[in-house]
Image (cartoon, rainbow, N blue to C red; front, side, top):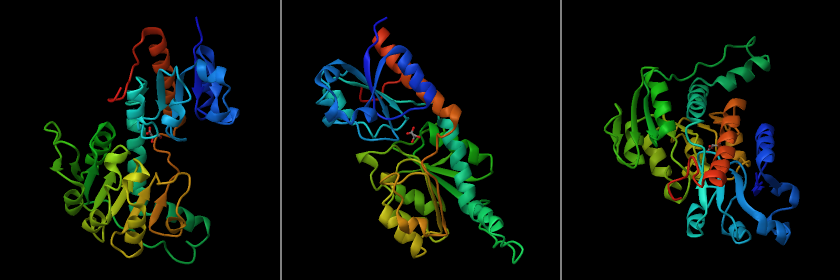
Length: 316
Ligand code: DGY
């Protein structure tokens, strides 16, 4: 079988790299010194990209250097790292990895919510630092009786809602449309949702349409008992406004898996005791990352053997 030349934009799990090498001539962008360092013959040969949500942008700058590019297969359900509009203009297909990570991200979200409200990381540090013997750990707030607001009721948002419904919590949501088939209260915008809730879970896709959807007025509406959980993209939350809201008591606490400028985390967040910080690990189990990688490989194979990718994004 011919082995199409593809560009792997950032490292993937080893088994995924092996699967790519088995079917493709896989050029490692990070070993080659970046797009500008690719020899013209390699640029001409590249017909696919295996991209990675957790690494750099895939946009016109790269597309312009790869005249025969046909497909960008993204490792991640979010694809704000790929300029899908620029790809569509060039007839380049974009695929993502929906479905295989919903449960994993939902589990992590519940864990982060509990960790934030019950102050689990702080309690762990308390024990390790030998402080328990001196005085009991301060009592925490409770998850019970909370009104949960989910900003973005897609597949992951629904998986989070199902889990939290099992905790006997009242759930409301905001999304582009009311969904008649779900048993949760609907609010048309982020601010009215925040006004009705005291926990706001952010799980909308990143990108221009959702940038700073959670701003100072939304945080003010969430209120002084409010807890913000962000497991989507840092760009969705106005990070400066969030820091100010945590510092001045506009909201009580935050649990964050994502940041504006990853892997940089603002020093102000690191300094705060009412924040739990994770390093973008929503989908970060061995099994789920392997499943995501396999879907990247399968999308590329399906495109090059049948001309039909398995999970193209809407713009493709
Ligand atoms: C995704 O799939 O978009 C995740 O954020 C990557 O872990």
